[in-house]
Image (cartoon, rainbow, N blue to C red; front, top):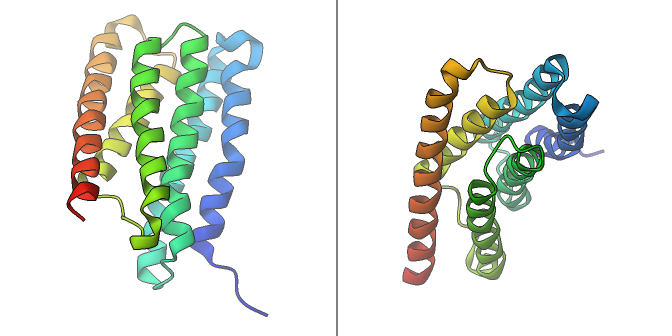
Length: 177
């Protein structure tokens, strides 16, 4: 019997955990601080698992096309779910959610279109972008005091800039192929 690929299993678990994060985000109308901290914990764990699955895959030489493709999809699903939830609750501007989701969907569709030429792995800039998006969204989920909202918004501004710049870079790299 073949041993399951741990990194791919972790990625699948991230996909399956995302609805739990959404549930916690909306529990009691989304204004219950305890449930917001639970939601943050779930989404933060999803983010940590993202880091772990990549490191494990490289260390064990278990990098697969399936994992290389599904890993960023799982990231986008988690970030997108949290962002849409926050926007529905009026905690994050819709234009931010739409801008980031349009970029993420466009890059994912482009990945699907060019997959026959080989999967294009995430760049270092893309990984930094994902980290900033994760932390930025996390700061919106957490029930932070208003004195920290400027820092939270600044973090999200960096995430937006990285999202746009890495999206342009990704399309440029595909066009050069």
